[in-house]
Length: 196
Image 1 (cartoon, helix red, strand yellow):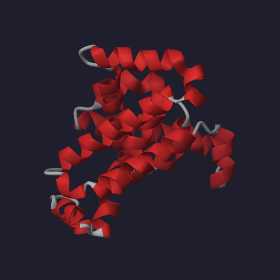
Image 2 (cartoon, rainbow, N blue to C red):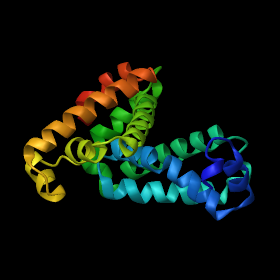
Image 3 (cartoon, rainbow, N blue to C red):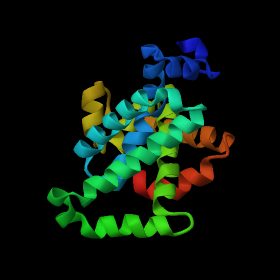
Image 4 (cartoon, helix red, strand yellow):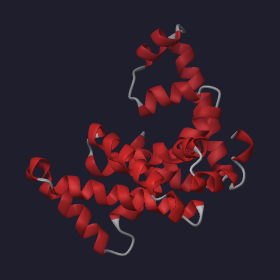
């Protein structure tokens, strides 16, 4: 399936029920949908369940999607609704009444909270993609996204703490350059406080 990543061949196969194409769709969207659900629920265990269920629903409705963008919108829409339903449920609603109110109030505004979180989720996905290609990307991921200390990273990778600092500094500089090249640096800066 690698050769089809640039075009929409994978999407046509997905619509026809090809399981490799489903894997392609899953790989393309899983992280951003999971992040989106996590940002609404603030509970990773439920977010993962909802994300998996969303992909199951997409697979069941695969013949209805006209474009890859249609599929992506479906994933975000179904995830948002499932998260709100989860927040409304008796077992979680009591402790999350304020959060649910924030979400539903945001949906009535122009540029709602959900839309901003969708954009943020897509940006997080883009950052993950950069980190996978970047020398030192694994150190940035462990440090900023997983919250590991410099000492923990050094021990796991069997390098000195000083090397961790150096690699992290170079990788951050390269990441900023890549995002500036793609005109995403301004958006990256807007969410730095939340993810880093």
